[in-house]
Amino acid sequence: MSGDININISSNSTDVNSNEYFTLLSSHRMLPAYLLPTRGNNCLDHIFVRSPYTATALILNSCITDHYPSLFCLQMEAKRNKTERTDIKADIPAIIKDLEQTNFTSVMSSNNAEAAAQCFVNLISTAIKNNSKIIQSRSKNRIIKTWITPGLLRCIPHRDRLYRKYKQSSCDPRNKLIFTRYCNFFKNLLKKVKKEYERREFEKA
Image 1 (cartoon, rainbow, N blue to C red):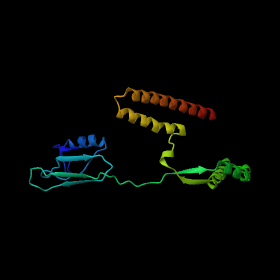
Image 2 (image 1 turned 120 degrees about the horizontal axis):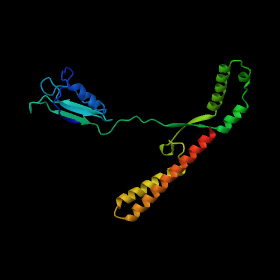
Image 3 (image 1 turned 180 degrees about the horizontal axis):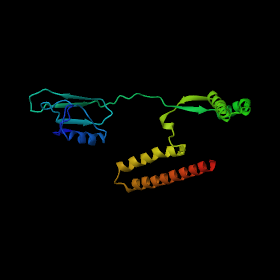
Image 4 (image 1 turned 120 degrees about the vertical axis):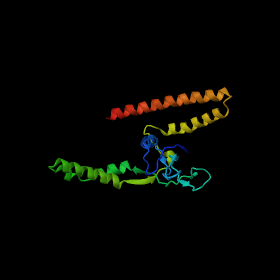
């Protein structure tokens, strides 16, 4: 957002409107690109920005107008650090076999409940750690919601393809009908699978 706002926001400003003005813009997560004077000692021409990109602001000491020209540059490619996503894959049969061979005498013979509990947790944690490995996970195979099945994941790109086909030929009522029917089918299937998952989780508890 930029413009000749005529509210002085310089660091030495005594403008009574500046605080309310800053509060309003900060509530929208917008920050000033500069607080430099743009006319005399007052910063009256503003540029506020909310962006993940690198930004640069310049004030030109020029006599073109009675206000100094303001320049604002935005780097269009954001610099993001690529982070590898990993999952922990546990070998359940190996963990069970390891626990079957674990000596729990230190737990059973303890007279202190807290010490026994901590010892028990340590034994279980050691068995899990010794039989688990860290693997890199591909984003397309990562399931955020535990009730989403691989079959549902395959339905999503198919639904999206039908949507694109319908939008590209909006004059063809058949494509709209096919997309609408499949979309409704997919929504009902999502609700059914989620409801069944929640029912099983309640039964486990």
